[in-house]
Structures are given as structure tokens and as C-alpha cells.
Image (cartoon, rainbow, N blue to C red; front, side):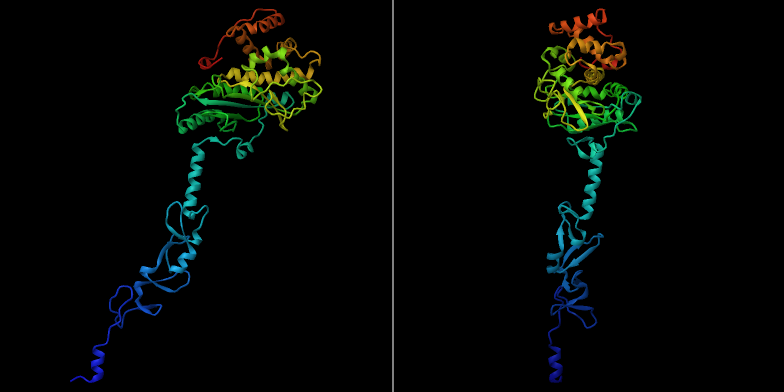
Length: 408
């Protein structure tokens, strides 16, 4: 018959694991969670405070090395965050930026880099891109006092329903042809455009521009664009200020804005005054003191003067004529008489044999304007040119078949 002590032992309540509720045997590996006995495999040691917590009460997270760790409730509240991109819980050591983990932050950077490679149209006046603006010297610039020209040509997609990807593909195709191993052109967004972009060149000489635009605008990709036949597109020519005098600039401003020179200006610019290139008739004494960048000749930039009067175009010869016109105006203004800043005086400068090499596209443009677009307003221009050259003007022969599709 059992003794009283043996009876008490036989009826003693066994200890059960607070997590799995199984009986804890004497040889089981156990830990204490608070004052509760738990199988060691039913508990986790908090990675922060080292206290044990039940498996069901612990919080699972990833650390900065991608390892899984477990935390007690209070440490999880203080030391974890949910990644905004992948929704996984991380310890604060894995914190990146903008509420994402370091892994997702790296993925964002890689994705941005890939997009930057495919989305070639940058932001308007993008500082990083413009910081890479470097004049490209050539035989022409060295022979002309280090004068450089930078062109900004605005274009629209011909298909208004073209996707953003198609727009970037078109820009990329043109830039690939333009740049090769040297960055000559880049593309930017422009708020004045509906669905297009702006092609911007490095500062270059007339010789480099001739080689560049004849290649770029003869590409098939250019046929996906519009420029001349839009209400939004312009063409701006920046000219380096080096060597330009105040009197020279004043004469150029007076010449461009003189009402009696409207026909001449309209013939090359293909427009005459708007909100982006306002007409501002001025006296010679203060013509170089302009503080309005939206005049035909913008003098507000510290390193360049900007001819803003031209309409957009997709014809290489017209782009080159506009660059030559900008150069011719400044050269004319350098030697002209203050009392004779007239159309006739300017044409005599353009058709002077000494200036023939720097005005060939400009003269062809005038010939096209007074023959192919023989509006009555251009008759005085035709008469003046024929009187200076002493021969009748004939329409220039189109030698580049790749540009025949483009507008005049």
C-alpha cells in the first residue's frame, strides 16, 4: 500500500510548455519566458534585448545583411520598419531612404540608371546636362576669333498620339547619329511644346554645324517630327560674346527691329515677332541695354547673345541659313555705318565675294524665298539682290534628295 508521500507525487500536475502545451520532461531543453517554462525550440531570443519570447509572440524581420531575425514585441515596435516598396519588415539597420530598405533603394537606383539610358530627353535646362556644355573648336572658330554658335531647335512629334517611348526612341535615333564618340547634341523637354523636345548643340563653328545638321536631319527618324508647320516651334541661335562690342550689338538690335527691314527679316526668319521674340524698335544710344530676354535679339545672357527670331525647321539648309544670318548680322554691325543699317547695305555685305564662304546657305535661302515663295512682299528684296549681283535670281537646285521632303 503506497505511503502518503508517494500518493501525492503520483497525482502532481505535470509542467506544460506555454507555447506548444506539450508536457515538459526532465531531460527537455527549456527556457523561461517571464515566469513560464517553454521548450527551447518554442521560443526565440530577441536580437536586440536578448530576452526570450514565445515563437507566436515574436516578430520576424530582415536585418541589413538579409538575414532573418526575431524580436520581442517592444523591440519590434522600436527597431523595425515596413519597406514602402516590397512591404517586408526590416530592422532599422536596413533603412535606406524615402521609407524603403537598402535592397529596394539599390533597385531604385539601378532602375533609374536604366531609365536614364532609355529616356534620353532630359528636363528643361537640366543643370547636369548643361554643365557638360563645352565649346568644340574647329578650323572655322580658330579663323574667326573663337566665335561659336549654339543652336536650340524645337520639334514636335508628327503623330500627336505617339507614345512617350516613341518620342524618346526618335530623340535617341537622332542623337546616336549626331554624337558618335563626341557629345555634340542633347535633348530636353520644353514647356512651350505640346508633345516634342528641343535639340540643343554644343557651341560650334559654321563648319561643324554644316556637317552636323546635314547628317541629323537627313535621317529617317526626322520624318516622325514637325517643326516649321507648328505654332509652338522656334529655332534659337546663341553666339559667343567674345569680341562683340557694345556698339556692334546696338547696331544689330537697331537693324533687326527697324520696320523698314521687316521684309528681309521675315524672309529668313519665316515669322515676324511674337511673344517669344518681340519687336522692340530702339535708338542706337540705348539699344544694347536690353533687359528683356524675349526680344528678337536677347542680350540678357552673360556669355552669349541669342537670336530668337527664327521659326522652327527640319531642313538642314534652313538651319544653316539661320546660323549664317546670325553671324552675318554681327559682322555687318561691326563695320556698318550708324546712319545706314538698311536692307540694301546688309545685302551688299552678304553678297560681297569676300563673305561668300560664310553666306552660301543664307543666299540660297533668299533665292528660294523670292522664287519658290514669290509673295508680292518679296519683290523689293528680289530687286535689291538682282541690282547688287547684276543678274536674275533663279531658284536654287536641290542637290540633297534627303531633304526634299522637308518644308521650305
